[in-house]
Length: 484
Image 1 (tube, rainbow, N blue to C red):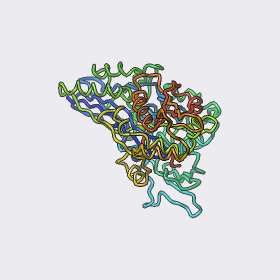
Image 2 (image 1 turned 90 degrees about the horizontal axis):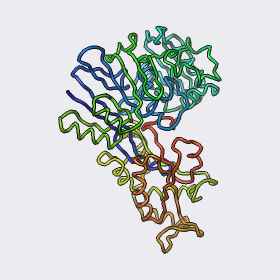
Image 3 (image 1 turned 135 degrees about the horizontal axis):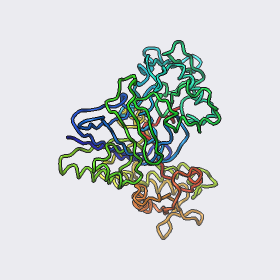
Image 4 (image 1 turned 180 degrees about the horizontal axis):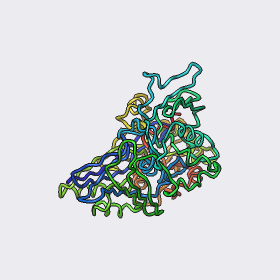
């Protein structure tokens, strides 16, 4: 018997603006038995467990309920990334991502390519991308999925009244032609690096025959997105029940175009407490924990499995953590936070290696962007990424240029104002942001900056927008939205 625990590496970066970034996401996979399942789609969600007799089942713990069953419905906070992970079970997309966060074909037969003419940059600066989908793909009510569904999905996501997919690629596509039921030709308003990506992050595919008559203005509240009885997906699993705040049950879809999944039933359990998730994993009640187990919990599982040769631990990059500085002159404190030279100085005064090691000892990697370092995108970005090595002397010199001088007490002042910078601390004392705070506080103290922990409301977008100093937040690595 063999079990595995996977948890992304913790990385600290600093490229765009001045932010330092760390990658933290947790995937715990316990595999029992000798026969395998396999992922529902190339590079898609994985993990499997096999019972000695009867149906094969899989229990996956999430720290929070998904936002919806499908659709790029606007959401924020802790539910966004777990929702994306969940949606690749009941839904299928033109593309997905490999373990290195590189695009791979899913519903599409191949990725569009400049080499074979399926990706063209037109003479007027626009772009034409041709998608070929597999014939015989079925919706979970037995209807055929065709290029007409792709057109309908584009219409829905492009229409601001629907509040569906507003952050996806649909807004950049001028039109979609369908020369046959299995071909969709996207005409983009301008050239973009996103031509070959249409995943759960960028482009949802919705069934025209189910949603065409729905009120678009109220589409975000349509039962389709939250009621398994009303939902019709195209993925490997069909949702059968959703007990809000507790669990979502799914069954294998017999007509799934890549063949029926090996796992018969999948249950997503909502376990908000890290300790409870840890106990469930150790007890064998949970097979996969996606972001449900803390870093320290992963260490405990690693130690317990080592005692009995019960499994192994694999650390894998997944999510970027970074600070957002206040850039509004009427809200920033100190006001010089809006000066790019000051933000650069804050980077030079920050020892990112020490911060990352504090948050995740032994699983830290300092990089210079939010991209996955081993991916093609990551390698290209790394070549041009701006680097801010730890250099307190340089930080002090830059701040002096702006007019900040150390007083007799060792703190920087300018015009009688002390350089005090607010840091939004989390309500959860075990949060890695709170672990990092005292270390960053000491680092900045050496340069003369007084870092002050200030309670905030995580997930409150209005409060975040007005917070005067540094707001910790997160972003999936290789997030491609910024490329559009």
